[in-house]
Image (cartoon, rainbow, N blue to C red; front, side, top):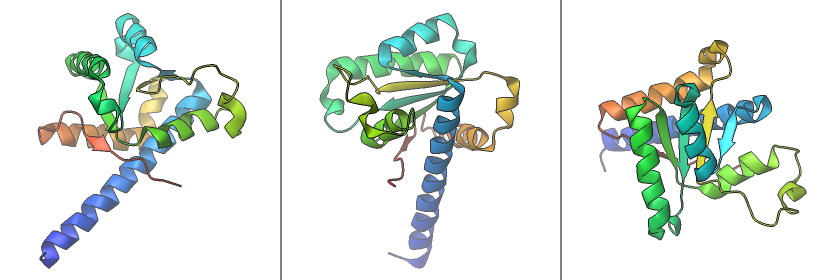
Length: 165
């Protein structure tokens, strides 16, 4: 490996870490502002009713989910709809970390989701735009820029890995 290749790889890793941090910040704000929709079915309903308010779509799947044909069909339809409606899409490769962010931050306790009979479907998460002021959010702007740059490189659904804490 040459010095240029090593340096380029380091820069890419650092950039992906920044994107992951920005995504964590956006999710945290969306939870506190209640501008988040969780679940494939719930996301499809919102996309049908109010697609203009959706600013970000996250599709989360691990290796086991990649073998779930029904889930992949849902993902394909959601991706097509988001592309058609200019909604930024990210694929999260570690849904466990996404679950930690979404389930534990709601009241700060890991036991918050223990009482539920069935864990929530975290395969699709939508972030909506409550006010025009949210566009001034630097973390959201960073994610939108990342998605746009990825599309320019023909990577329509970039994959990111949320940083472990």
